[in-house]
Length: 518
Image (tube, rainbow, N blue to C red):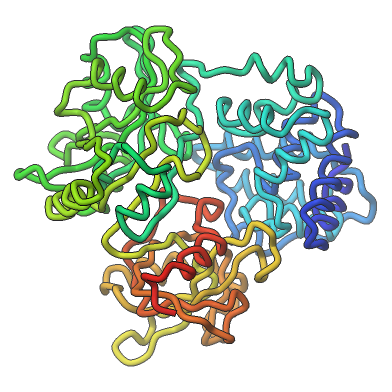
C-alpha cells in the first residue's frame, strides 16, 4: 500500500469531527490492506510507528530534502527503513542515521514528508486514537467491537490482533487469551472527590478500599524461574528491578500474573519522593542505590487458574493466599463510609496519595477506566498535557516558565490537536524544575529556530504534567468553558504519554460536582 493512501486517509480523519466518519475512513483503508501490511497500516492509521525508538528526533527532521514529485513510497518501505534506523548504534551511527533520514524523505512527496515528520515525532494530529482504530477494525472485519477490545487488551494493543480480526473474525479473536509472559493493558481507575462518592460510584455496599501508593505500576509475570516485569506502558524493566524478581521467585506458585506497584521507602517505611522511585526504576540497578519494594493488589492468573473474569472477591482471596502481607497493598473491606474515610485519612497520614475504592463483584477490566475502581486523593489533581510555555521574567528571566495546560479531547471537537486548554500556571516550580523544563520544551518547540523570537513558545503536545488545583470555574476565555483555579505543578509524568492524559469529559464531570466551586 502506498504511503500516499494513508496520508490521504489521515487527512480525511483530521478533516472531520464526526466519529462515525473517522471510523468509516479508517475501516475502508484497512479493508484494502494486504495481510502482510495490516500491522504497519493499523499503527500508521492510529498515528504511531511500531518502533519504540528510532533515534530520530525533531531536530533531525528540521531540514528536509526536496520532496519527490510522484507517489512511490510504500508503508512497508517506511517501516523497514525505520527498523534499520532504530538498529543503528556505535561509531558513525549518527551520520548513518542522518543519511537514512535524508534518503527516506527524498522519496516522499511534500504532504508525505509532513505526515512522516509527524508520525516519527509522535505529532500526528488527526483525532484517531487506538480506541477509534479498534472501532474501525470491528467495522472492517464484521466482528463485534467488544470482541476486538477484549482481544486488544489481552494482547497489549490493537496491532497484535488486527490480522486475526481481519482474517479469522471473532473465532480467531476468541483464541487470544491471557498468556503468562505477555503483558496485558492494566485496569485503570476513575476519580471521585471523596470516599463516600467513590463507594457509591463503585456500586455501593461492600467495597475494597486499597491504599493508593505513589510508586510506579508494575505487572509481574512468572513461569517457573523466568520472571518478567512490565510497566503500565508495557515496557520491560525486569533487569532494573532485581529485588522485585527475587520477591516474585519466592512466592509459592510456579506460574502467575500479579498487578501492583513498586515504590522506594525510607528507613521509617514512608514513601520517598516519587522522583526517587522514578529515577531508580528508569535505569539498571546500581549497587548502593535506592531499593524499591513491590506491593501487589491484584492477581490475574495463578498456576493455570484463570481469574481475569472472576469477581474481585475471588481474585483477592487468591492474592492473599499467594502473596504475604508485607508485599500486599494495605486493604480494608467494608460497607461503612465512616470506616472507609478513617482508613483513607490513615493512608494519607502515612504519606500515601490516597485510596482506591473497588467494587467486589466485577472482573478485571484490562485496559479500561470505569467505575469498578475509583481513586480518591486529598487534593484534586489532573494529568494534563503542556501545549505551550512562556518565557519568564524577573528572577525567571531566561527560563521557560508559565505552562499552558490542556485536557485530552478524544472527539477532537474542543480544541486544536485534540486538546482543550484549561489554563496556565507557573506555581510549584523549583529552580531545578525550571532548568529541566527549559531544556525539555526547547526540544519540543514547534519552531525551534525561532524559539527566542516569541514570548509564547508552542510545543508538541507530548509532555504530561500532574496538576493540583483547588477547583474549577466557568470561563469564556477557554474553548472548553472551564478554567482551573489555583493550579500548581505536582510533578512531570514521564511514565505517561499524552494519550493517557485526563479527558475534557473527566474535567466536566468534576465541574458538575457540588464540592468544586464554579
